[in-house]
Every structure is written in C-alpha cells, then in structure tokens.
Image (cartoon, rainbow, N blue to C red; front, top):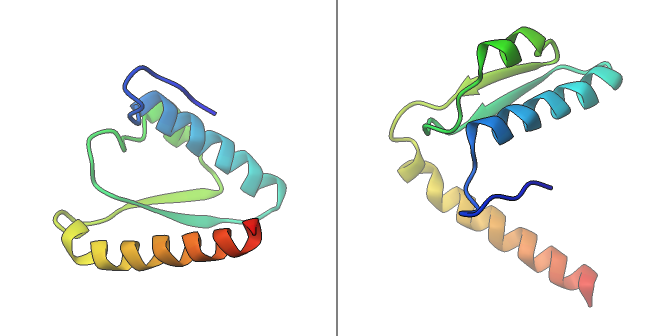
Length: 88
C-alpha cells in the first residue's frame, strides 16, 4: 500500500512495484511481459532496470489509450460484476 497527498502514481512508487513484482516472478521462476501505458510516471529508472531479470517492460505506442479505452471499460465492468456476486 502506498500513500501520497494527491493519490497519484509517482516514478518511485512505480519502480518499487516493478521490483516487488520482479521478486515474485523470480521466486516462481517465471518471466513476464509487463505492458504499460506511455505516460510520464511510467519511467523505469536505470538502477531498477538493472535488477529486472524476470520482467520485460514494454511501453505501448503513443495515442493507443483512445483505442484501448472501450476495452478497459468492459474489463472494469466485468470485474465489478464478479466482485458484487462474490460480495453478496
């Protein structure tokens, strides 16, 4: 859990999450591709990049958000429906 005043993602938080995910994947002896949107806070620092041996970070092309937004909305809707069923 991370907290900051504006509740926005920060470069430091993003890199911490990458390192923790890398450690989880390393323990499971798995390699993954991590697709991220191309926004300013999604910067992989050099010191973080050196430690990522189980994750390949790939940035989406510019202007793909408008094409992917409808897909995101359906995924979120589906997740909420499943969550509500489990909650009840």
